Length: 275
Image 1 (cartoon, rainbow, N blue to C red):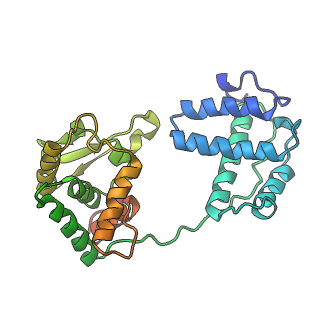
Image 2 (image 1 turned 180 degrees about the vertical axis):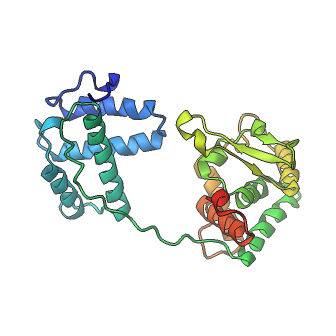
């Protein structure tokens, strides 16, 4: 027998898309998915529902219906659909029907035989050694101004040293920084959801970063979070650094992350640790 789930208890093959999608949304949230992921997945399946006839129930959807929808997305909708977006929409639809099948609502998963469209990611851009020096020179100069500002240097140096992701940077709290750790200071990258605990890790940071962090902390009101600003505000800070350094690249969290990974690889760091 398929496993039971309270989220599917009221759903049958005759259920319309709207209540089924609402139940799936609750399930995704309960599984610890990020709000961004839940929003994107739900929007993708709602788009499929809007394409199908209004009276089409979840049990009446066929593999052909899904494939026709995907073809319409690419050629008939009149709105550009990038390969990456198409791939995500296929993933969303597969996840929705797999959930219905897994919990016994559907005997057959109509999305199982839909072909996934893999996207080959472009080679990531990284900073050269000279460019790393240029951007760090810019942030260092902000520390030396008549009104010193250590924030750009604290942010940039942390990203280049640790390679943490944007959401990890935003979630970093002062109590995640251990100055007395055996072997030297570290940051502890933590996740609120148990689903992502496997991503948690401790990363060494340099005394240079600790020094600039203390400067920065004294200049700004740092309490609950190390960088208490919106994601976009931090992105602007990086963009401004890149422009001031004269880069012909778009300095970003991802670029810093890949630059950090490349630097570690060139230094002979164990590949599993980099991964």
